[in-house]
Structure formats: structure tokens, C-alpha cells
Length: 450
Image (cartoon, rainbow, N blue to C red; front, side):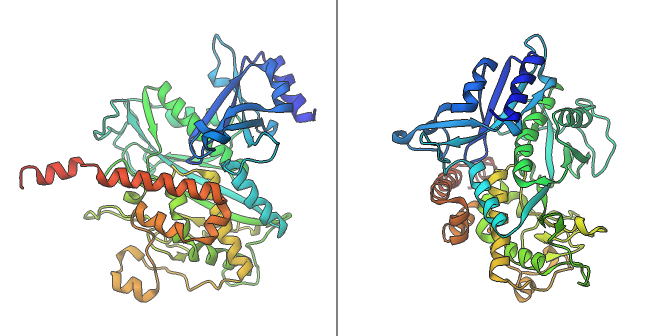
């Protein structure tokens, strides 16, 4: 037994923790959990916990259902805010294995580990920093009616809520108490919309943190009598929720994206990485924006006096917030990074980070050339102007996105055959159900007029 496992067992005893949750995610990024008694954890470290993989979205077929959830002791964290008469609880993420001890190809954590290992062979460590947006709405029926936001605030407003008045402070405190560092938190553009930015970390830790973040935020919201939702676009006439994500590669202690001699301080590696993100953007969009609703955020209804910053066109720039990839201003060499703005808050972070890393690494390996940056508002251009400038549109709906993805050798390689095939089949089924559904819009527009 290694030191980290011993630390976990000792902490459970010293703090009288009665419940240990073993977490993992399915292919779509839904958090799954199995609870074990502390007395069973030592054997779980040695042998794992058996699970029925056929019951988990995308894991296995019925006839190959036996799988093992192996706890990762480095992810152990006590949840003190879930205490009470039953004592504190704790959680660990798991790696999903097959009965012979090999990694399960359908485990999203393994997909990301595999992408990170491939980058490590080239000498790179991949870091990410997400800015997570979400809505707080008043608790009510989930019958499809328009939700009521908890406030009427706007960007950076210091709002006094009728409900959940202390939400962001409580959420940040809860995250900090379990070791997830928060950089910023503020009110976003739309009523009820919030943003909390997590601190930079290696991509696997960040993906684990995002899964924990979504759980904690929803729990804190429920404790204050409201509901948190990471749905990309809950309102037709308000901005959607993205998860702008900053990416960087390090070689040891050196930021591989920085070059002091370059006028823009971007290294050749950074330029090729950005080019990879752009060249393959349409191919990986189905992963970073995996829901029917995701495309309502990318291609919103154009309203008078509305500012549209959703990155729907393949371009890059420095100050341009309509660009798909933005290079933020950075003062220190180790702060050199790029920001991908298309990804939304409801993505599976393991798969999203894997495909973005795969695209960037492809650019480095193949020596892709970076096209000129766009500093004009790409949304304000006409279709003809965008075409003349070479700005392709991202897929405009989930159907187009999965069609483009289905032809991508890169995404198939990054995800692996099992995840690639399941993901496409699942998303095709979602699209088929959506396109056959008669909506309130259709009834309102046609029932009386036709």
C-alpha cells in the first residue's frame, strides 16, 4: 500500500468519515457514484469495486458488462459541508478497468490520460484554466416552461438577490474547502447568470475539478432554495453559458508558447498549436458542444442592440472576442496561453480537453501554418465578407456537427473506436428525437394561422 492510500485510510479514521463516494463519468459526462463503507476501502484499493458497465451510457454491451472502478487516492477529498448527524463524507475519482486489469477504452478519464501521455512523449505537459458560466434560476417545475432567473442583474453587477443572496460566496467557500482554487467570481451578462473561474492546473486535475465544481454548485444552490443549470442556452433573448478555456503547453518549467523574440511573443509551437485548433475546429465541435441546445448559444437569434460574442466562426485574434481562439495579453512568460471560446459549460471535460489537445498537437506535429489573425468583429461581417476572408462557420446544429465528426480521423484516433462510435450513435439519436418533436414555437406560429 502506498503512502497516499495510507493517508486516505488514516484520514477516514481520524475524522470519523462514514461515507466514501467513488466517482466516475459516463461518455456523455454525467457524474456517476457508488458509496462504500470505510472498512471496505482497503480492499477497494487492492481490487477495485465491481460495477455493471452495461448500465452506464457508452461503457459496454450487455455481454461484456463486468468492469472495475479503481479508486485514485490522489483525488481524495473530504466534503466537510456535507456533514451533519451522519458525519462528514469524502470522494475519490476512479479509473475504470476491465476484469483483466487493463484500462477500459470507454472511460473518459482514460481517453484524456491517453492524449496526455502522447503529448508527454513529445515533452509537453498540458494545462487548462476554465471560466465556467451558469444560470441560477428559481426552483420550479421542469416542464419546459421558461425558468425565472434569481435576479435582474447584468455584467459585473453587485446584485442583491431576493433569494440566494449569498450564493457565490458560499459556493466559492465550499470549493476552497475541498481544495479547488478559485481565481474570480462575478455576475455575468444575463439576469441570473454567474461565472466562477478555476485556477490553472494540469488538464486531468482540471477535468476532475470541473466535475466536482458542477456537483458543488448545484448542491449549494439547492441549499439556498434555487437551482443551478449548466444548460448552454436557457433563454432565447439572453446570452448563453460558455466555458472559455485557456490552454498552454509546458516543457518542464518552461512555457512552450512563449518566445521573447517574436513581435507577438508567441512561439512557433504556439502558432502551430493554434493552427491545429483552427484546422480541426469543425471536427471536434460535436464534442465541445455536444447538445442540441449548444448550437442555440453558438448561433443565437440576432436581436437589436444585442452584443454577440459567441464564437461561431473559425478565426483567431488578440483582442477579438468574436474569435474562436483568442490570445490574451500576458505580462509574464509563464502566462502565455490561448483561449478557446466555443466550448460550453455542459461538455464532458475529459473528452473536450482530449480533442483540443489532439488538434493542437496535430498542428505541431504536422507544422501547420497559422493564418493572419482577425481583429474585426466576425459576426458583423456579411457571409460574403467572411467567405472572402476564409472564415468558415462552425457546424450550425448538432446534426451537421456529428456528420463532420464522423469523417474525422483525428477525433476517431483521440477518442478511440469505442467512444467515437458510441458518441456518434447517441448524438444521432438525440438529433432524431429533437427534429421530430413538435415545439411550442410551431404551435404558437402555425396553429391559429394555418
